[in-house]
Structure formats: C-alpha cells, structure tokens
Image (cartoon, rainbow, N blue to C red):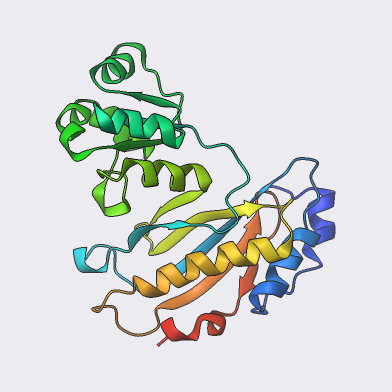
Length: 235
C-alpha cells in the first residue's frame, strides 16, 4: 500500500472512521480536513441497495444544485433554427449541427463539458456516439439532455446541473461543490442530491436502500454520514 503523506496522517485523526455523522457535522469535518493549497472538489459516494444488472433497478438521473458547483461549465448544443437562437440566448458556449459534428469527427474537438441536443438532431449526433459515449458526453433523454426545452436545459446545466448513474457496484458518485463553499451551501447541495436519490428508489429494490453514504474532498479522508438523516429511503 502507498504511504500516506504527513499532512494526510494529521487530518485523518479528526475523523472517527467507525462513526456515522450528521450531514452538517460530516461536511464541517470535510472542510476541517482540507489541507491542500487548491480548491478541492467535495464528492459524495452513496452505496445503494440495488442490483444495477436489472434494468428496473438502474438508478439514473440529474439534479440542479441550489448553490451550483463552483466551476464554469462549457455547454455545446446541437440544434437548428429557432432552437439554435434559443440556445445562444440561454448562454450556450457552442451551438450548431453538421458543422460541430464534423469538427468532432475530423478534428477530435471536445472542448466542452456537457452536450445537449434537440430530438430532431439525434440522428446526426448519433454519428459521433462512439466519441461522446465513452466520455459521458452523449445527450440522453433520461437525464434531460435531449429536449426541445433547450433554453431551460442550457440554463440548468450552466447553473450546476449534475447527472449521475449507479455503477456496477451499486454506488452513485457525484460532486456536490468545492471546499471553498461554506458548510451550509454544501449541505444544501447534498440534500438536493439525496432527496433526488430517495425519489428515484426503484419499486423492486428490496431491503435497505441507502446502505452507506460517504463524503470527502479530493485529497482528504472519507467521512461517513448517517443514512438515518434520510430515513424515508432506508427501509
């Protein structure tokens, strides 16, 4: 195993690894344990009592955080006509159709963080699915990135809309902000994500739904959160 640095060993003592903390206390600990000079991302990992191999237990969705993510999100939109105008007015960074697809195909251009498309453009966008898909950039109607409500989709994405999907191990990973955020803002974002996960609980999921919740900064130790804080989904 790799040897942890001196600063990490110092802050790990702040966290009781056997305890499940109240959400607000956990986030305060994450901030206290932040020791690097850069503004780290605060990440959430939620182990769900689901079997992702079953299609009816695939938990997937998106959430718009009340306090954003603390970073600039570059948005590309595949649209034409009035929807192209709507996208530009809403603040999209790049808007187009055949021209953008060709640029991605021929030049390998991927200078954006999120992609949104109108349904009538998906035939065109499908040509670059092998490029966008593995990078998590392919527009998808299940998370609201294939829509005719382009203006709203762009505004939400720029404001800090985050997509999530349970992985093969049954865990949802998602950022909830930066260590520079005050604990109250981090808590607001955390609650927004947890409330969304509670709402998306599959009807076929048996037993405990929220098994483990852990929050951490990029370089800091993980802090466990008591699932009882979101009791409605634990049974």
